Image (cartoon, rainbow, N blue to C red; front, top):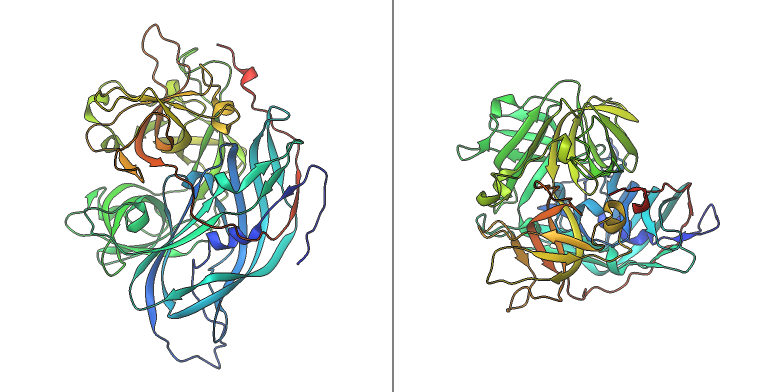
Length: 504
């Protein structure tokens, strides 16, 4: 396998990790209609993806064109419904459902793949600006699975996790090198009353309704993705099931039952008509923090995922778009993720929409500049060191993010590296992976939650406040490095988002 398109300031990329990230996201057959294969035993499997974020990455996007799993005996199994583009940083601190399907039982020893459109936005500490790194052409090859992946008789959840934090290094010229650290974990399905993202819970699962049958519906999880089937019953809350029709946009909180089927706990919204959804990180406006001056009508968004009915024009993942119509758009956030004591003064509107927040926007289809009709504040993740934490008091702590992190240099935190994190005392925060003595000052953690720009009277905000839904203890990863397949990328024209632009 050879690399293509050599350019200066190269970024060496291990494509081996990428194909493992989205491996096993569909199932097909290589037989022809005239020579059908006999049915083979299968097992129902659910596949999820996540990553341990790298501080300097703002976006990490790749298109997987094709992938097949090669069993120890027999022919390769096609695993992908179609080419699909994924962005990885938005999955930091969670596991996102990729597919739910029947997989032929057996032992899988290698994968065959083709990837393209590698695109990374990262903070370049040498030149003090955000840089876009873009690859051209395609890259194909194969990789061995060691240990082999065994699909047996019991339904499992397969978690695919790329440790970006420990996979990426920067050299003195500002180039990046990726030496992938990757893990694949087969999880038993947990009891529905204790499920986390890793072992069954599918929270904020967005998609497009493909069909409705009885009390269930089938939804695709993104452009080119596979589908999942979601059941409802009398316990399902939220929007009425009767609103679900083909091509409707829907967001669901679901749990996985013992047989690997998904049951909707809540239908958060249903939208129909000539509309699309985009999710991403707010990168503008700049100049002043929220409320100074009052919120305007536009903002810029780095797109991380899109959902739309077929033949709908949407931005590319990794593009930056301009949202307009913000003065008349509707605003919302999931209040049930927050302690009740904060709901009286927390708000989200165009006057508190600013850099460092993540939003899900309902838009009129298009690219470049699009009209936003609704914006929902969604979770974002940042990693750093715990400071000023007192578990005996409910007030919060400071997350000291790295000075050269993407979050610091996107937002321009003041004081520098200080990210305020509130306590959530009503069992709204999951503490994951901590030792027996719990969270302590000096620990490195990842915080995932809703970021609010809260500006009380007479106070100039130095950054958003994170209300955490999950805090992970970042222990040393136990996965080994995979030998990377090299592809050379070039750095595109820089897109500056320096905190020097900001005036306070």
